[in-house]
Amino acid sequence: MNRVKNSLVAHASATKKVENQDYSIIFEGCFNAVIVADGIGSLSKAKEGAQEVVTRAEEILRASNVEDLDLKELFFVIHKDMQEMVLNKEENPEKNSYGTTLIIAIEYQDKFKVAYVGNGAILHMRGHITDFKKKVYYLPWACVNYLNPHTRPYKGRETLYKHFAYGAADTHVEPTIIEISKDVNGTGDILAICTDGIYSVDHMEVASDEDDTLWIEGTKTQQLLIHMTHDFLKEGCHHKIGLELALNHYLDNLKSIPNAMTDDCSLGLIITEQALKYQNQKDIENEKY
Image (cartoon, rainbow, N blue to C red; front, side, top):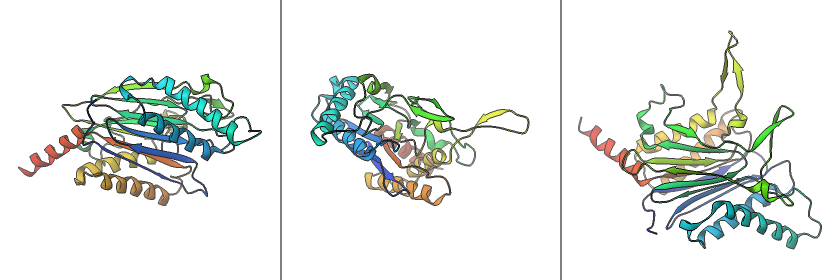
């Protein structure tokens, strides 16, 4: 397999709480990958659970022939390894400890493959996101979420019915798997994965206007993420350090907005080579006029 070249890959994580129970990682090589996990705060040792599944996922991916990788089997192996890790570490481990979600996104030359258990978001943006003026398009249609959460209603909120934890059955970690073809000759693609502190459709609030017409409220965190991506591409700072700075600035911005960062927030972004080419070509054409 040829190396996936010239895409930009970065991640960031932040919290306003005492302890950040999210964990994320990226790596680049023959394929690019972003992995994020959200430790379930209501369960004990959630932070350790998130770190365990992300670290183990990275180890397996690095040692795999990723072209032949079975993502469903990967989740089962991570789950099995977690059970063994806990038993080796503790004499009487608490059932449902080490609870966490997991999202893995892999970039190949012509596609993305994403597998997840839990909630959060998988945001797929087209490279022409910069064609949409921020003041006109609150949530442009060039960005859609592909993650349908593994949650169900519970006492007016939502509860996970799939997640990693000590003592969980294999059925609890069987992932949803999505394959997305890349636009390798047109606008290119941007893929963002994030924990629910940034965005998850099971957290969207339903409201009504004065005529009792129902509508779904967009989130400020999602809007600002799209704006950050828009500005990064427009400003032409197309290198990894610049993207890392943009992601961390985005999270700092959330901290400064009341009620915006109410949970741990982690995200990873992959901007394909074609998306960067599309933007650069636009910039050259605009300079002619």
